[in-house]
Image (cartoon, rainbow, N blue to C red; front, side, top):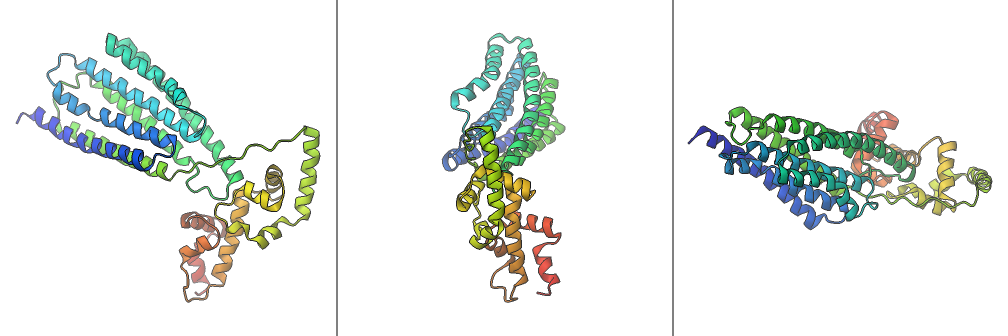
Length: 368
């Protein structure tokens, strides 16, 4: 067998496995995880990635083509369309209810236009302009997402006692990696203008195999994250008639909250044992205003709502461990749910952070 054909077939085999994973992931999202728009969008991205990773099949079919540069550039422009979909996907994660389908298509239109224009004209200047515009947009967008996810997380800490599967820190990390990958992919694509007629070597096979494996890992990771991602519904702002009245009411509420011994009420009602406790829920239970309660916790307790409620939970967990009977009627993992935590991993991180020791070691020190 001709060496070039052999390496092309091997690359097709590796690409085929990758494409199969992408298509299976897309089917899974469409069939079983179709609740949110960002899940549907990523399913579409997986289909587009499957088409993109089929380039080795195209290479095998057009290995005798007299237009290798045109075909290669066309595929690179198609990849940039996927970049556009990634940006849209990020928008729907940060703003799950803000963007409808038409707005998203409008955002994607410049990438599609560049692809169509180049397909018709074959003018290389279109590729150069699209390359520059894509990386300018991507660079601005990545910093904007970092800012928005940080702001979102801060707001989440002020409203939720459980951030598990609500926070978007993973999104900031993944788009940073994808940005670097896209740069490397562009460099590789541009440097291989004769891609369809180039002799395939063992090095090409190794590089492409590694590339496929990395792509599978990050795709599976994103699928895992978005199937567990929850959308936190922030309440609308409380309405206040005017600033002077608001200031007076705020001071009145501060005084009332301080005099009511809020900590005792929370302990007595054991409100912190509700894993889904939110600022809105607690303000209703205490018969007060959500915004005033938040300001009181921030100013008087010097804590976020998240820290405030989880401190109660950690004290509860510590009490359970202090009164451990040694008969192991429940496990260490059970302590998390018994004290109001939604997950053991969150409980463990919080316990170690506050007490500088793990729950199991804490028990051992007590001789249990």
